[in-house]
Length: 159
Image (cartoon, rainbow, N blue to C red; front, side):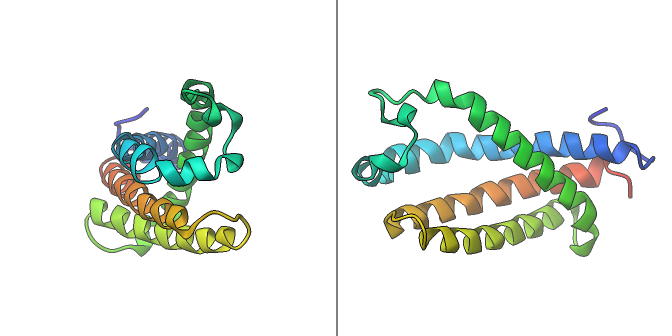
């Protein structure tokens, strides 16, 4: 399944599935670095001032992150599978080596994410400091995930 070059169209689903896992793993690793720095560091005071926006588990003392992990993992994987599936359709639009194609795709995802954050910032009354850091962090997620996905697709997806 994962790790074998696929040549039949029915294997595209397997490649998208495995690509989603690869994307998720790269983004997860970025989150292990950015989470403590951004969410438990730079934004901690802003988060405390806007506690009414967070899930009740995050307002417990200490925050009950373990209770939210199943939700975060499930939504992260679903999103990663969608991202990998779309990449399988559009990757030939990007030139360069696989990792570079993935980086370009990650940049496109980031730019789409910027437009979404701009829209949501007009609805949710959170400080621009939060929106700015969330947007910057998404750049790291999308680039790392895109590069990993591009590398994987270059090695294992049908041409």
